[in-house]
Image (cartoon, rainbow, N blue to C red; front, side, top):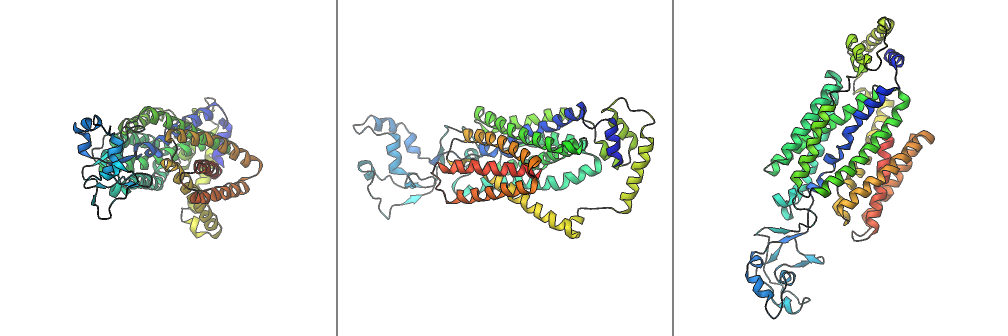
Length: 447
């Protein structure tokens, strides 16, 4: 309470708070380029088994023959037909020439089939290079693609757990600076990784430090704001993230090589490292650490009109606050130990899990909807904006609980409906957009 009085005295709603909030929101322009980047860097293009003899000069002779054979028709005799397309993981040991005369001719039951022993041929129309095409993460290795995303999410979990506590000990600003720099380093390392294993390790640390940079930047901005402005700041953050999705879609469309895209998204964090030097350390945190002189230095950046004798009385009040806190120290275990807090915490944990699971389950699997992936990313970014804007008005006019219940109910129904819609149905992307709309609004309400 003593710190809030001091902050109100020097100004808790001025130009400094606005500039600081903007600086701390800038990382959200880049965060989607790391959180959702595997939609593009780990995309799986259309592919089939490579057939070396089709690439030889003899193919030209076949084209000039009376039958005017094309590569597409020849592919039919060497690669089985599965689910209305060429098989992705198998081919005939010997060509089935009878299929040239009749595409619907039956293939003998005892025909020999083998795997893609000569590798794969990938369609480069949408993606010139991805980690899937470079390290052949298809067929029996397709689970490795999903593992890479899981490793990244594991980094987010570890970073959120450790770097938040570390910031309470050494300061928000120090963790933000270090995290921004290390996100750049780990992201660049991922871009130049020679093997999938090293790529996954780099992505783990990428996720670990990006959550440390984002969460502590968010906290640092909040600790300078008046409580009445928190909802507005959350809305600004939410829409900045949406703009970041536009940035990702533009970068991915212009850079079809995964290494260039990963490198560009990572280098931007070195710029964030530079601008992170400008905001001062949280005066609230400094006061809690009883570093009163540093607190005043930090506050003077808010207002140069602080009188020398102004903090004397408030300093005593802050010391009294610290004495009271020392007499009874609270830890995260109190969230479980105290019945009322335990109930509320478990409910919020579950809501956060359900919202995040649904949101990223859709946003990280754009290829599953059989729509141009670049257009779909733009559509997701567009739908995010009215969703979060509506959530803002719901908070201020209806309240969080009723609004949250409505968003979650609609999101749950939408996600269940998606399961029963055929993948080739046009309704599937529409339902996905509605699900994204609901989960984006729900995450806004939770902030």
